[in-house]
Amino acid sequence: MPGVRTLLVIGIHREELAFGREVVQGLQVEGLDVLEIPEGLSGRRPLPDETFRYGTLHRALYLQLLPYLGESHGLLIDLHSGLDEQGPSADLLCADAALRARLRCALDAEGWKARPDAAVRIVPLGQAGVVQARTVIPEAIWNNSAFAYLGLELYLPATAAGHASGAALARRLVRLAVGCMQEEGGEQEGRRPRA
Image: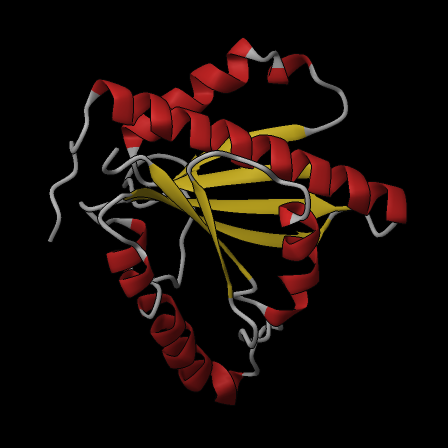
């Protein structure tokens, strides 16, 4: 069905590739394609004299994703990870209001608000006047009429157990997002015009 497949990208930042591989291992989800970036950029904050070059490379890497998003892809999930000793937790960053609403409903239906083991926030991208995230990702990626973008930021404790529970949380959230996208596709096949 057009527009209901999901592309999961791992390894944009090379330090996060191993975590992405761990998440993908054993992740059997119908309608999910995985794109691994074998030699991504460093996730280290650039020094002031490296900022322009880093930003240019970052934008170029993201724009290279566009040809991988086929006619059947309605969602791009961009997986990242960071440290949080209070984790695991996750931020879902998305500009698509309809997808955010479906994600919120799905999280509520599964009782995520009451879960003591994992905090999940939905953060809008690009909406003036509300709490929102800023990103250096090109707008052609996070605000594209042909597909929805979902940044999946996992925050993990440094322990092995925390890392494993963070990977399990990421898998649950990927399944949830894919389900939300397939739900939309069933209701509104071909809703997003292709550029």
